[in-house]
Length: 133
Image 1 (cartoon, rainbow, N blue to C red):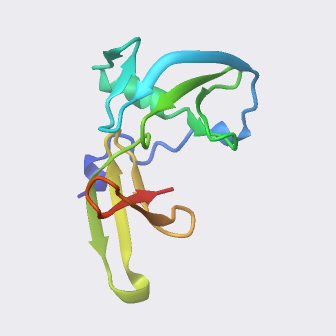
Image 2 (cartoon, rainbow, N blue to C red):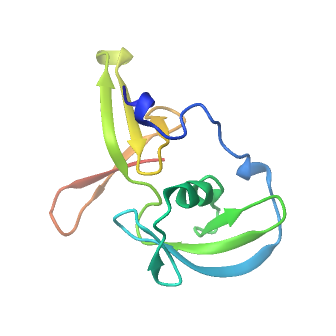
């Protein structure tokens, strides 16, 4: 059911890790902590456009986030994390347990060796905030 609600299920990912274009500068684009994308200070209201941008998003070793195509790489700002889990499913138990998330841009990711789950101290609430790589 979770996968059926995912906008991009089965579409595969762009091979951004194989693209190494020159840096072309920064865009006035930001992903706020609530997952809203902004361009020039204005929210991007068209979900297909947000999904297109999110499909070429990459965080490099320098800690910065970029939109990457085969011919250019531009920097953007990310307040916290580029994606927000909006749905979670847990199936199985013990060693066979699988935790799957659907993001705000329609991707589905399962926590595991390729996508480890980590928890960070949340200063504001005193609790822990989960992140999936």
